[in-house]
Length: 334
Length: 179
Ligand SMILES: Cc1cc2nc3c(=O)[nH]c(=O)nc-3n(C[C@H](O)[C@H](O)[C@H](O)COP(=O)(O)OP(=O)(O)OC[C@H]3O[C@@H](n4cnc5c(N)ncnc54)[C@H](O)[C@@H]3O)c2cc1C
Ligand code: SF4
Image (cartoon, rainbow over all chains, first blue to last red; front, side):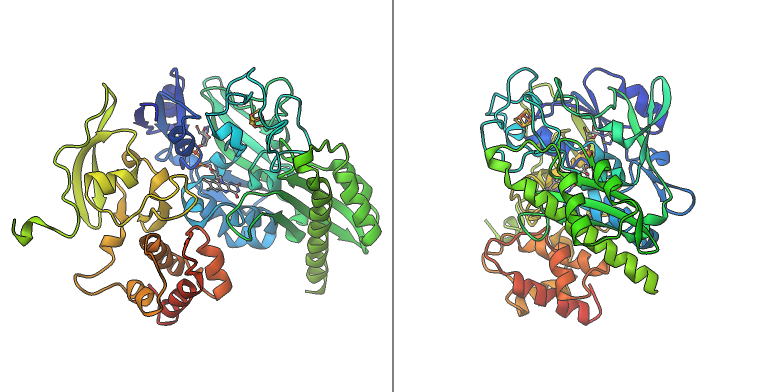
């Protein structure tokens, strides 16, 4: 591991001041950062520990806007009774992620900033990885790419964005709040994770020295009938091979509002707006669900190792729609 | 040498392993199993290495070193966490509990006893992590059914496959009023 100086920030201002220094990285739960430092993929010279910065902690799930402090742990947010009732997809995306130990350590802000699990990115013995060393090539294009993206990739990188929480947040038009040396800004989560294009080394719109302070979600009645479906290689404690967050608002047996976002299949959290539009005004039956699921995977560009993900993605969307529809029916009956 | 020179745990090193250069050294206080230890170590030291190499507490085990197996599980301020991905410097001011801190003197913790009673291990390497995790699983209120226990214990792998008996041990302790 690269040697580093450690500083525990006492306030947001103190953190920003130290974070502006050359080679600085912020430390939250450390479950991505310490892991990648141990294997030599990330090499900061100084760590600015955010755990004592009070205004980054806590969360509030009542009110017109849900607000999650960046340093709230995945476990405490996942356990929130209000979230579980009113936004099951958000709670499930956290609960189905990682393990109980990791959820106690990891923060909901750090979760959006985790790095890809592409094994070539994580293994420094492979030289070709544009994300790790820009311009070096991509070992995954013709390598073992079973876990890689079929949506949103480029000839430079096809690594999947691994966060489940980001996918659920995307379905709800969440926003992120950022503090930097130049002040504060808020941006939609849709533009926070950036598609790779020419520069796969850049994954988010966060600039050096900036701190993610909070995640904001506009209140939404469709939240109650939402769900997060996640397909993994084993039943628990594994990253998504394919996942879908779906929220539905039904009126008179027809879809008034549908929200669909995909994960495990794409290089960024993937909002399936065309599939949402296709469902609007229709009843939910086998044919409308199949059409929407197919539409959601439009533009997929598979490789030999991950071609199965196109069909798997469709089925994951269908499964999530079915479960959300069941929740809508139960809600009506209650 | 007399018995006294062979304590159950390896003796703490008087001097931390010498850093191989002019690396940042942190002086810190680790609170482990109710006792405070003033230590100096390289900032890179993980909590797992600090416990094992600086304090001689070898109960928490190194497994994958990537947060994926749970053999290194300890309680930090009562919450189960992976010591392999925790920096020791970052745990100052927190209370750490390891497997060595569960028993009351000679009296085993109920979860330790339950693991023996239910034959919940074979090689024993993952067992300290399993037991710590199981105690936390019950305290969190996540041991309501066998299914729930399996889901919330999934952060602890057992290569011997003792899972069915681990679940029974956890259920047993939960039924008797908890951990
Ligand atoms: C074995 C394993 C399995 C996992 N499984 C899953 C899974 O199934 N699903 C899933 O979604 N995730 C999974 N994860 C990933 C885990 O959820 C993330 O590692 C975690 O959420 C990151 O949060 P953290 O607080 O630990 O971030 P850290 O590791 O502390 O930080 C991550 C990055 O973000 C930066 N950073 C952190 N917070 C801020 C901030 N507030 N402002 C600016 N920069 C910041 C850091 O500098 C660093 O670059 C898994 C991880 C492991 C190790
Ligand atoms: S897919 Fe991306 S992260 Fe993986 S090897 Fe290629 S460039 Fe690197």
